[in-house]
Image (tube, rainbow, N blue to C red; front, side):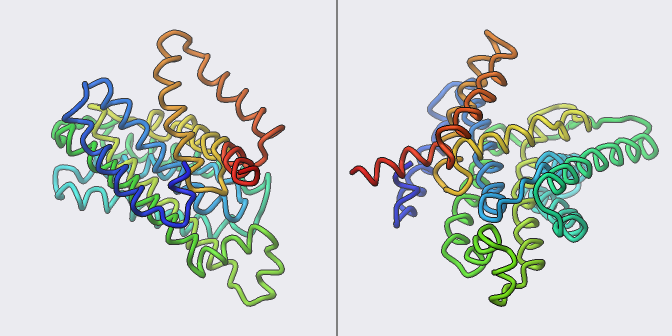
Length: 305
């Protein structure tokens, strides 16, 4: 965590990617599956924090972008090369985010959160309707899929790109504009920031990573359906991981994604509902005692160090 919060995170990122890249060949299939889940939530939570952590807009649309990427992958897998399938998932999600952002980003707080959740449900039902009308069924069977190693390395690349983008954006004028919107949107507007354009661009950037992750993860299932890939659980867990880790930081969501992916695998087998209870309890404790999530512990350590 310290490496990612320091002034020179690139060496740490490169080393972490190299070590993570060796997992499919050095560990068991179960460990690789858990690592894949960690990487997926690292990509989702980091990209969510990139926009929502800076602007303080609470988006509940992650599962919509993830699902759109998954369906783009299922549709194009047999006609496009794998890299273009992933790119298509990112572009479809980003395009929808542009339209969604233009419609709802003038709202804040509860209104924005509720509307993004409502639009996610609207997209899920729209996809279900189209599937029934076009193919006569609700889901899709994925007969031709890449190897497990290819999928793993793809999700690793998406997670690495999300972290790298968060680092670059934080140090850019665009990142300053996002942070300015989070601090005081009216003041940022007064200082010349085109807040509407910045918000829509940030929202679309977040969606691109969620769409890419959905496109890559879709092939892990032999059959996908709207209820699975547009599941609110994906979106809620992403938000909880980011908030518990510290949405305003880069390292916090990464550490939280790893911890909670490991917790999920442990508790789902022994206590099916225990994982969500633990997640909810930790969120309450963070809100009460760690306002900036787990990143607060690191900040306090630096002050006392």
